[in-house]
Structures are given as structure tokens and as C-alpha cells.
Figure 1 (cartoon, rainbow, N blue to C red):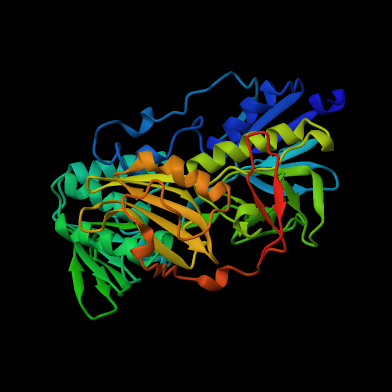
Figure 2 (figure 1 turned 45 degrees about the vertical axis):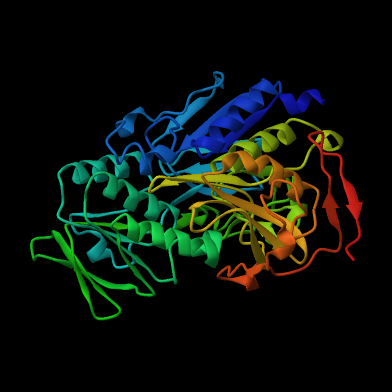
Length: 456
């Protein structure tokens, strides 16, 4: 390892999960130089998954979700101040307080923020929330504990569904509006979304699909009272949560020359950022939710993932590559995984379900509400999702890593799959699969050795 890469000045913009794990990994890799952590929130790094689960249920307070530190990163923490600009020529990060931080290498891990309700005057009504930060969760948990007559959740993705689940567990009436045909359809496709819809309705959720909220209403004194829907109906409620997805925090890079846009910052498989002309940089790296990166197992599509595990794995790869010369750098090839707990079900996923054209239920049934669903794209396995059957995921992970044929051969399946007819996966935007691979990589091992096979 070149000694100069272990020294110098590294700035990490983004003091959440990816930023913290990268800082720890840099020290573990032998970096001895100065390390500065910049974060727009005033708190040390904290864990976000509990915010929509344990915090909303009142099981833990929002201020007790701090992330444990694996080791002291020996960093200069600049918390509560935003980065407002990047000068790649002078190698400086500009902060909102006017300070300019010089760097030799920069890691961008600014993540995402909650997409707000688009009408500012309606979003400002008392009782209207988003859920992303510790403060958001604390405020919403307090309102739920007060026992509102009804909660309106706008959006049936994972966050919206988990909020609805928490409301029902608290015994609160809740209405969920989803513009698509069913909850979770954007993440899991049509078949499993039908199970999600059934689970919500069976647990007493007033689920309205195929509709949008056209206006939020107040009482004249600034308090939220309900919402108008596109089908002409109205929902009376005391609390509203806009669960409209995430916005990637890239605006501060508008004049930086980097390939940064609404889908994130484009980078190579080694986490090095691209500039706007598609040229890879060698001193600016990206990790976590804000990144867009190619994955060889998924046709080299530029993936944008908002997964806890991806943030950790990518941060560690970025840290390794920041302090190692080219021949020793490694790619970010970890398989995406995520999980969700809602309405008494444990949902876990490996791979990329939206990178699919067909699905087959390999174990269990929708009626049993305990199953393993395998996703395929152009004849090979690309993802699997289990519902209360997480122990099967290791088997499907191996199928994805080895580009196994789809439908899968007998193995973890509890019946012959030859009798099963694959169903369309019904992912909402197949046009997002923009191109096909020229080669496929399969059989990668922990040491990242790869076998290259030409597609047939």
C-alpha cells in the first residue's frame, strides 16, 4: 500500500450510517491522516429503521437510536452544518457557515431526505408529517400516543406500510392511499403486492388504491382535518403522514461538474464518482443511498438502493479503495438485501426484485401467507423475497450469485416447479431496464474472483 494514501486529508460529507462505517473502515485500513465528518443534522449518527417501527410503537424513544461505533474514527465532527458546494479543482467543500474544507480525497454519503408534500401551505398544517429524521419520528410518535381519531398515510411503499402497521398495532384507525394498484407494488411487483393489500385490509386498514390525494384541508386555524381524493371522496383525519418516497441530497453539487442528478451520483463499481462527461474521478468517492452504481449481476444497470446493508457494504468498499492503489482496489459486488416487519409478517429480500420479468412461488402459497417467491429476468434468477420464511434466503442467494436458470431447479422448493407457470412480475417500470449486458458475470466468491460467460 502506498504510504501517501494512508496520509493526507479526507472529508466525508454525510454523517449517517454510510459515513460512519466508512470513517471506521478508513482507520481500520490504516489511514492516519486528518478525517473530517460533515453532517447537516445536529446529532451523532443514528439508526433509521427503528424510527418507523419501535419508535412509532412507543417501545423506544427516538433519541435512543444512536448507531454503535465499532471503533473511534478519531474524526473532526462538523455536525449541524450543511455542505453547500464543491470545488473539484481547488479540492474544497464549502459549508453553509462559510467555512471551506480542503481535502485530498472526498467521500460523498449525503443520503436522502423525505419527499415533502408538494403544496407548501398544506404541508405546513399542524398534524402533517414526513418520516425521515429523529425529530420526525419523535413528533409523530407523540401524536400517535395522543390517540387521534384517524391517521391518513399517503403512499403505500415500505415506509407507509410500516407506519400503517404501527397505527393498527396501537389500535388507531388508519387510511392508506396508494396511486398504484396495491401497496409495495413498486418494490415487489404485482403478485406479492396483492398479499400486501390483503394483509392491510385483514388488519383493519382502510386501503384506497388507484387514487391520489388532491388536497389537504385545515380548520382555518392551521390544524389538519382531512384530505380530498381524486375519486371525489374525502377522508377525515387528525394526522397525515406523507410517505412519498425519498429525494437524494445532490443539490449542493449542482456546479461541481459531477454526474449528479435526481437518481443520485453516478459512480463506478469501485465507488469512484463520474464527472458529467462520464470520466471517472480518482479523488471523489460515493457511498450509500445517494449513489448510482453498476452491478454485473444485474446487467450493469445503474442501481440506486436505499438499503441499510448496501450502505454498510458500499461504505467499506469506498474506504478500502480510498487508501489503496489501483491494483488493490475492489468492486462493490454485495447482493442487495432488505427486510421489513409489518402486520405480523417478516418480509426479507435478496437481489433486485424490480430487475425481473417473471416470478414463481417456489415455497409456500399466498393463501398461507408464508412463502418464498423467486424473480427471474431473461431466463436467470435475479431476486427472491420470503414472507416468514427467511431461512430459505441463503439458498436463493447462491442461485443469484451463480446466475442460475429461471425457473429454478428443485432445491429449496417444496414441490416440483415444472408444474408451476411463471407469472409476469408486473414491476411498474420495465423501461428502467435500459440496456442489456455484453457479458454476464457469475460465480463470484468472497475474494471477488469472477467467471466471465458470454450470454447465449
